[in-house]
Image (cartoon, rainbow, N blue to C red; front, side):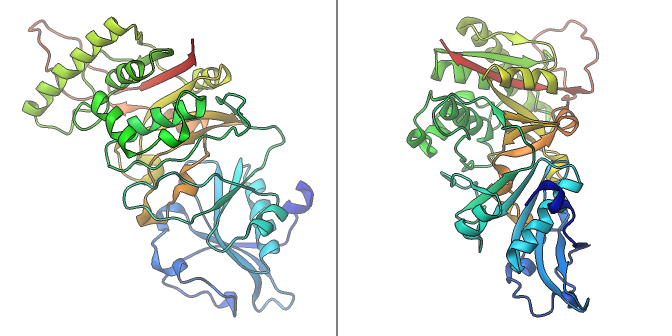
Length: 379
């Protein structure tokens, strides 16, 4: 079916409320999971194909997506499944999105392939407390292939690995980047590797940009590493009391000293979406520090891996999924985020602290900062 035919599929789009039955679903076999998870934070809606008499639908799909992203996810399709999926793809095209995903709860490989979807590589691990289907599928909605950071190893997408704790996102993104680049065997990406790298990078318990960059360089001396951080003040400390900030600030200054010793440059310029695209074009991986406020609704610093680009969006892998909202690894893997949204997410508030070893006056801190670690090709 052509793009024009998909966009002309007759369908209706209505909000989904798990507490209010929709009579137009009629006798369609709706899975219980539609009603057991509160997906309201991810814009749940039904994309349905009306019957000829207008009294009931012949097909419907429950569709969600993380806010401020460029994809739709089919949780399930019921009734005339091919028709429902065509309707979702047409709906996504009309919205100018980059991608449609399909969770594999009931989708078969044959049905997915017939609808133009390709299988996602199954997760090596799921993030703490997360649930999800064993399989998932993706269909990109643009003509050009995804440009990404991978070496030509026959399978370009990175492995998906969900962080096993609430604080090891930085370590996981670095490990996945190196597995994607061929510097780490995929079978070596496990919890021991996750916690070992985190232990070398942590500012207790978070990983700040300089400490993460130094730990990556120590683990892979042949990989070039550049830290991008547009402040020389301690970061990620604003939620701690002053006494807790002080000793963590000491550790961050130590990390800067170690960066100088190990040859890890610290670039004070902000890393823009254009610069991220250019790095990916050079087959570099960008570990980007973002806030989860836009995608998940709470302002928590978090590391994601930027590894691909498509028209208008950067493709990331997020090592964490929020099971409470129906978010799964299918959402978090190969996730396209519009350039503007990513730019907003990567601006984090600067800690309101002046805990330094010097009594000299300091300039007022900027209201926000940006941090990233760029891992280049091995020498």
